[in-house]
Image 1 (cartoon, rainbow, N blue to C red):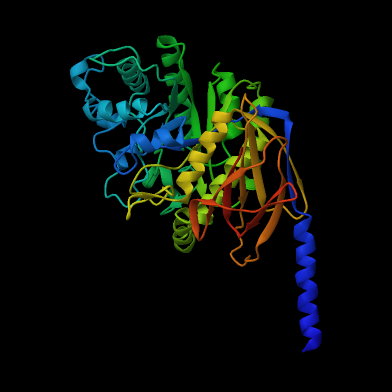
Image 2 (image 1 turned 60 degrees about the horizontal axis):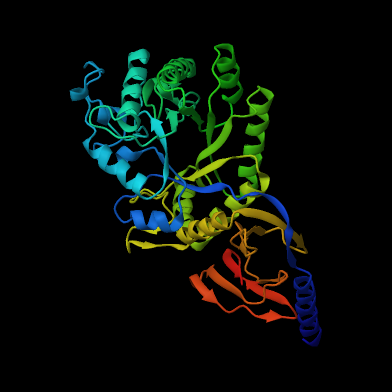
Length: 463
């Protein structure tokens, strides 16, 4: 027994010694880059997700995808232009009413829009498919898109002058090509997003891009919003052959660790550069936590997204992507109410969750403006940090401990030397016991000492 006790004391002493070596140092005079737009989201203010909450989180971009699943008669082309055989040049054939109302809330919140041109797909249980089939006349579809742009940017049909820049052509056209349903490719039988060949999508993209560039040369037009990686090179090579270079390249990923997201962003950036698209903006406009797509994995992933672990995943991914600097815009999927992918709001209580406060913290980082270098020493492989400096020398930091392994339970102690001239840090803690709560972590010998459970997020203002 005495030997066991001695071993336990030795292990405790060893852990304490290791923790003492865990140091995060803010190099406040080493500027890196502007804090990026990692805090975009899917969907605009709706229901429990109010304009005021958007403003408080400083959401830079809202991507308009799957809006037809949460807002009736809204945004989707099949909702705006209901009869494809009608004359697309006449205003009376368009129904902008509900979309006008929805778009105004986004604009009034100070958020910009990435408008996904197309229809809501993902109708796997529907008896009849509506949104996923390709338009029967690609040139006419492009002209319909033109008139939607005219309504919101040029005042056509009693419209507006919102100057919406980003327009994305369709969603995940690659996702229905390889799965097999009843012996046939899914796009032929039961498409989720695109019920045509990948080559047909390339044609739609080319036709729509060239038409919109002719009528509205200042727009930023992009896509292809691929779900996977297999069609990237095909798309880029084809577009180069037909003289099309998108203004932005959009892509999607779902993962359980930030490194996977960073890796995919790096591959895509390299592919873009290799095809001469060095100035094409990389946009990750669907991402979230996910393990597998089977029933067990989907259930577990839904639970994680609305937990503090989900918040730690979001904070660590945004931080990792900011540090990697290979992707320009992120839009988290998503902020629409009444969906299991919305980890920022509890639809039962209608209250904000841990994840929402990651977005408010990122707003503060962007307000401060400039990312500064952070050095990490010790056992900190599960620690993700971003520090920012304001023009008047103030410092703030987002520090996350993210652990996907649910068997990890031990606390971790981290020492942060106070930046020069900053003596009174204010810490907002989120963990399984706290949600964005002011927490009195101690300061000793000029160091802020954090004791963090697995899956904790701390936002620190150094005063």
